Image 1 (cartoon, rainbow, N blue to C red):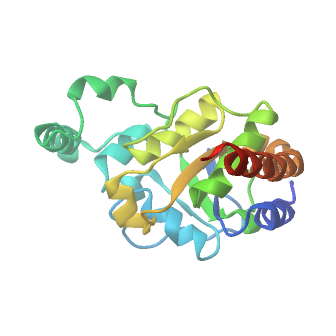
Image 2 (tube, helix red, strand yellow):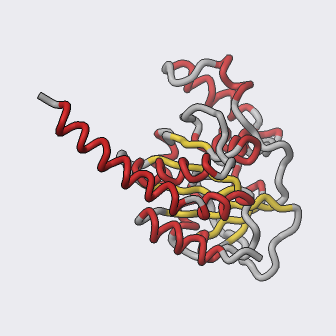
Image 3 (cartoon, rainbow, N blue to C red):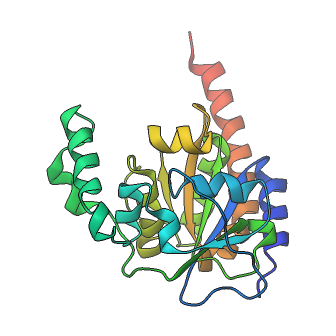
Length: 234
């Protein structure tokens, strides 16, 4: 088992405060981990709960209150609620938020997970499939650059709504930045000055190893550009 506490320590030491959440899609319930009990309005609500507590796991039925999040996680709504996805998408399209023709291109998990495990990265008891890093743009920029240097970054553009599509996108293509979306910001408390970076779990250590080079490079380039600004500004 990878030492995720050490990896989180290295990330925070190099980049400053970040909220780092491990997510694993499992075929069996993780041993020794409590099942989530209660209800939430969205799958991304589990992110903020995990960031501030211990690990827990959910089942597909815990995710049904967000039809769009269920869709990105390949969780079919039960027959008596099947219309909720179309109703939600129709609302979003009706107010100009999305176009219905965009929906087929939204990244989704390739199969329905039997269990989904969430934990603060440092407390991860299961190897994560994807890491959610939430924080200010500057630190996430450097982490994305480290991921790119490690060959672990995707060629996808900056993603937007729905935020949850960035998880399967990162798993399939590599690290990807997300602006978040208004629903996610309401349910998770993501600040207006914050973004997300999703990193494939198996590539996190590779990105962390490149942080020292990227940090030094950014410090050097900062000085370079500050000198140029002073010299070339009139």
